[in-house]
Image 1: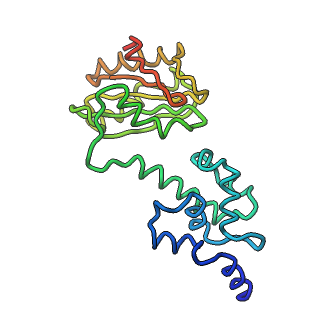
Image 2: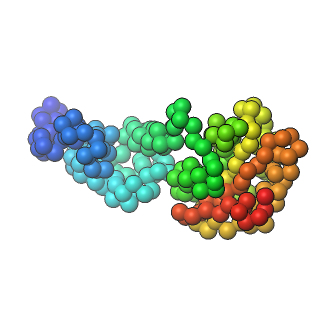
Image 3: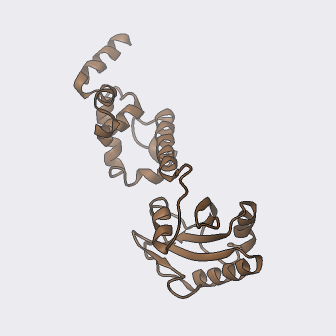
Length: 230
């Protein structure tokens, strides 16, 4: 077994070893294939880690489909077992979280575009509808964001108490809501409009204003406030 490991290491020239390249040049200079090779750690008996990484990326069309990949999808690929699959999933999720994190510099929403810029990247690739509430302080700075439910938008499911319970808990002054249309078309449905009006009325009663309801499509969005429904 030791002899086999030595032979595999020789298959990858030193200048092509991603760990060494990262240390020498920095992570930003590595290709997607090299970064994935570091996560995978090793290849198989038939191919080295570079070849395995290349095949995984080709399977998922580069990074496009990896954002929402599942462990089951990963394990269907020859050479990807549970350990490698879990490592990839953890890296994908960690990347999402670091992208969303804004530290103490609170994000301010002054327009529908600001809200869309905050949410577009995380919602555009979702395969199901996600209804999200973004809670703001008196300066319109984001203090919390929460997914309220996942599934088709329905006024009986999107209950105001679920939306405003978190607003009260966070002492929010106002909020915006958003949901995605997996079809890519952000045109509002009658149910979207009904839900918006219901939430706005409840917000007025308890003194927490619904500033907008955004519908996220394929690199585009619709503001129901701009459409005159708020």
